[in-house]
Length: 305
Image (cartoon, rainbow, N blue to C red):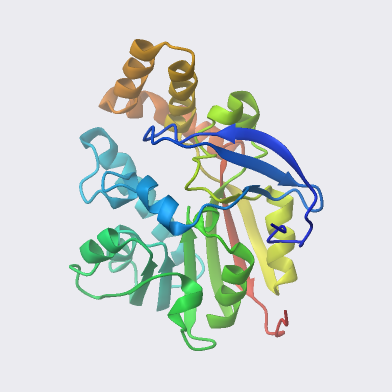
């Protein structure tokens, strides 16, 4: 399987990964392209394999997050809406991988928007379609066949790493954005200090749901190649729970089940989020967290594949 970004077939093995979150059986090879440093699962699991790893209790599908996480979740949604409002106040907006539509619902109160979503999970789509004022397409962005130059804003909130065809998806994003339109991409950085410390237990690898992972310089270059002007790249969320969850995965693997369970319970408590907020804010301010936001604008020059 050739690299989706550069076409090289030269790879090196990085890790053998498991679904540490749901403990569903299976092993997945994480490799790095020797041509451009893109990380991806090899071979790529198809949707028939993947859909088992998106159970109904998957975090993004929860209409009512765990009690202690609710405040943090609302804060995260507000920050996403706030950053968009700095660049655009209204228009046509598409959220790719919209899950149950929580972000789109929040955007209703942040300007004059006509809201669209794309989501592959039938379960999540059925929940999203119960919400008023949102147009939902079930499938992938490349299958939706939106018109050229249609949207003012397209968002990819922790979604680009989930798609099997990031290059085609980015090209489609460029095609359906209006000239001067904005794309917002939040995705984990596999070159972060968290990834280096925790290795294969890093929460950001999230096999097999994360099919591709993008080092910062690589994604910046790829966006530029497609004709985007990259305006902003910086740590966007300093989520301390990623660090503690990664630690719990490691403890599980070495037989410290009770300690791992205690850490997981702690990360779901109000005390954890109160205690962790200053540290998370510090990580974000220092540009050191593994969650990175890319803000780019469509240029007026047409790009050809």
